[in-house]
Image 1 (spheres, helix red, strand yellow):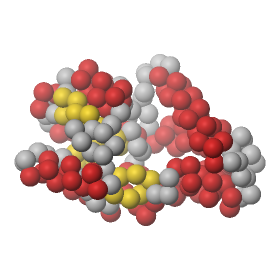
Image 2: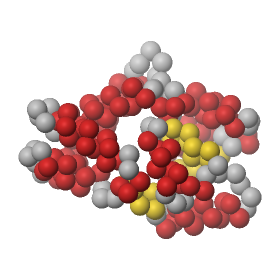
Image 3: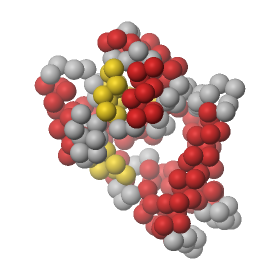
Length: 198
């Protein structure tokens, strides 16, 4: 539907440069992937796997930024800048295939809701950015209390929508977090490619 613009790596380079912490872009990409996987493993190993909150989501991103910038003294300031950056609708852009997919679903009479592992910053972004602003409901993991692939994430959405699992479908591009997790929850999983083709 949408993507960060500039890219995550370019945003990290830009903000790091502002505070004179300048790892190479390729190094940022590598460290980001490792830091992301580390936080996923921490959440998976918790006493309630993939439980989350506003506090936890902010903490996981702070830890990711710390790791990407190798715990530089400025990493706290870098984190605050990146947190604000990615919370701004102007840091995201619509994808043409996302617009087309949303329009197709609406024309077919489907109800549209967003259900994402992004935190509550998504609510502000979705209000301002097409096609996200066409959704009737926005569910952020930190507000639901769970992140995908936890089945509780899907149950919380069902409760909010007053819907049965067999009435719902998850459309997404992540085989594990979107499709497989939705199917385990009794939903239909509809994979899409990077060009938006189902």
